[in-house]
Amino acid sequence: MRFDVLTLFPKMFEGPTTESILKRAQAANLIEIHLHNIRDYAFDKHHITDDTPAGGGGGMVMKVEPIVLAVEALNLPPKTPVILTTPQGRVFNQKVARELAQHERIAIICGRYEGVDERVRELVVTDEISIGDYVLTGGELAAMVIIDAVSRLVPGVLGARWAAEEDSHAMGLLEYPQYTRPAEFRGLKIPEVLTSGNHQAVEVWRRRESLRRTWEKRPDMLQTAQLTDEDRAFLETLKTKTDQSH
Ligand code: 6GU
Image 1 (spheres, protein in one colour):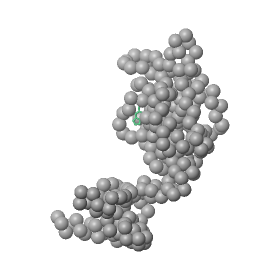
Image 2 (spheres, rainbow, N blue to C red):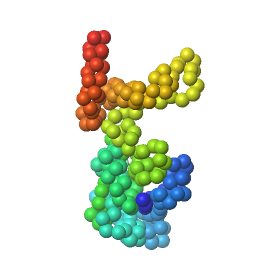
Image 3 (cartoon, rainbow, N blue to C red):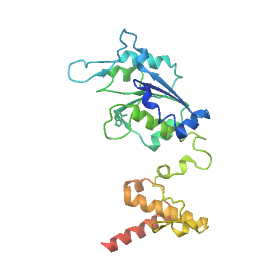
Image 4 (tube, rainbow, N blue to C red):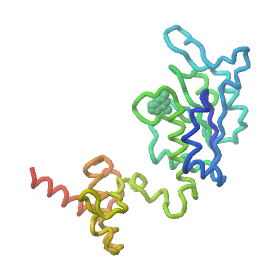
């Protein structure tokens, strides 16, 4: 999987893309992250990448020319998604991450300032993505979020023991509680079932705790989660319990 990122601030990507799992994934040639400075495609004397908005008003707008030239220089294969990160885009989630992970290559243009010249959308952008309903100072953090969430879906990136699609949001539920040694800390013990050696009992407990947490913290997710009859029966017992305590 190859990511091409067009940004005015390539140094912002140091850290998130150069440490830990993404570092290892790049070393193993499972993913490639290519950073391109939009400023290198501004060919005027001062390499200007932004200008005042046509029609007046405050703030600055990213210029069309450097961005379009930077995208064209990538010589992208047809059908490569060219994503613009912007608060106006469709909202990113696990389903969008899965969809993007199907591509061999994606390009991401990091929006900045009060906006990007509309002609960038008309000429090169195929998709617009927001990472949530709040406003960031720029699209770089959003691009890093997208790269991280998509990269961990690339086979091999997480290593064999952790299939990326086995965890919480992938199944439409929140993750169950995790524990590790010591067995007791400040009077708080690891639930006995987890140290019982009974793998089937562990699986039942984990499933129930996932359901309980989702019901408590994100009940909206239960509308779309894949639930068995047993799951539904357990959720009914939770509802009955709270009804009784009210
Ligand atoms: Cl993609 N960009 C900016 N500037 N703010 C955001 C965003 C993107 N997603 C959420 N907020």
